[in-house]
Amino acid sequence: MHALSLTTWWIHIASVLEWIAAIAAVHSYGQRRREGGWRWLALAMLPALLSAMAACTWHLFDNTAALEGLVVLQAGCTLLGNGALAIAALHLLRLQRASQPPGAG
Image (cartoon, rainbow, N blue to C red; front, side, top):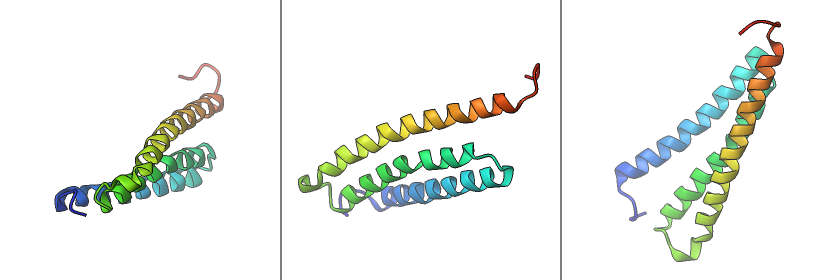
């Protein structure tokens, strides 16, 4: 735990909690609107959460070389998450365009 200052830990933990709240909010929003595309967006946010948790775990153990696999996991989850978010956003865009009447927007 000595690798990061207390302030930096606070930011890391707050960011993870904020991302969890964002996933819940996106899912809830989709349920209220009865639009399944939002559920996919919430699901696409999970790899980024896993990435953040991997980073926090690695820092928790003072960035030890024995856990360098977590850095690779974090990078992979970030790549997967960014791609998944892009695909989910495109899916939402297509759903929105499909639900608009012809000639609108």
